Image 1 (tube, helix red, strand yellow):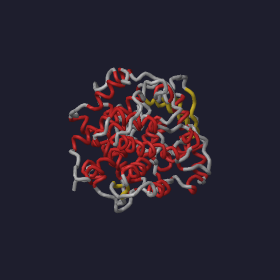
Image 2 (image 1 turned 180 degrees about the vertical axis):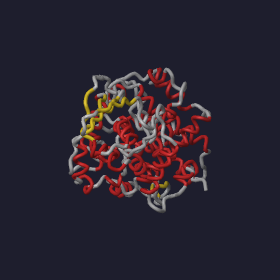
Image 3 (image 1 turned 90 degrees about the horizontal axis):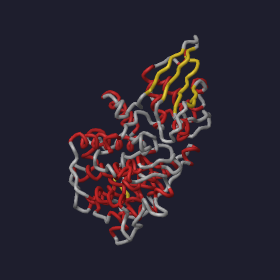
Image 4 (image 1 turned 60 degrees about the horizontal axis):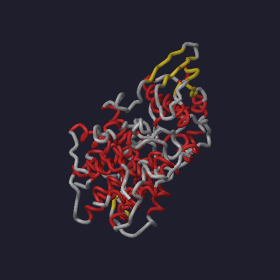
Length: 435
């Protein structure tokens, strides 16, 4: 059985030789550094110790580094831990039109096979690794671009596993079509943990990264995978997302999607960042504010319209815009160290959170994040309206050099004191373990 036209086009492009344009190469290294820093910052984060303890039982051998610590685990186990670390603070880059955290699964899986290959005496050339990373992110993003339905399955994991498998297969020389077919049989992850605000959401990223490495190992061992994972009768675009793969593949290669990935300034759900960026800019005195309304599309409300509770979990709080807005007004930033029971019980923060509301704007697009409008009413009755055209950290509203420095500085403060300094100073050297 041969793959249909759109899948064949994807496989041909994903397996071909490419040279990254200079501006794209710069974006790849910038986003690599951002992602590694986030992973180091998450050592010891809620849920991470359990993930690490479980991964230690997966298999024997010490081959692959864990981001932020000196411990080594077998490749699939390391990908599992690193995938969780990268996503668990909700700080990782996202392709907004695709609604896919496109860096997370790809870097976790790719880093594992790069380390394993180096341990076997065959280190990867930098350009080979960067191209594999760019292609993996492109495919993960492209699947989201091709989707027309709203999120039901957790697209960062279900699309991410394919991008990660392609990136890893290029480095491991695994048969690409079989690896993708095997990965499809492992694809999973739903939005239910998002609704409930649980750490099983980043667990789904971890699972996808581990499965991508396993899919490549099985394909190299001669194990066959489904030949039509995307367009088949029970393929991805039948079961996971409604859509048309050709929307992506008809223009595949005409633009590098990794250059469209947004950098997240705050460790919280991306749908909160438009409002948080504007509130940070305004630097309002919370005592003078009577009401804050965010008029926004249904997807934004679905993702971050949460009822504040003093019994919230940290995962829930990262998706609760009223709480996040209160933190921003109080501190001028979002610090993961504030996601504690003590802070959740702070009556002053709770009073500010009660002033924040999300309201419909009439938009019916299930995947739209914009436009948005922030409306602020002061206690003296004056009101102000602030249209928000683009989220802070997007290509249309990029982070300034100072904002990037602030993010990396906070990540360094959160990381273990003995974390490899190359993560923050020379991420490509760290990724390829170049001394």
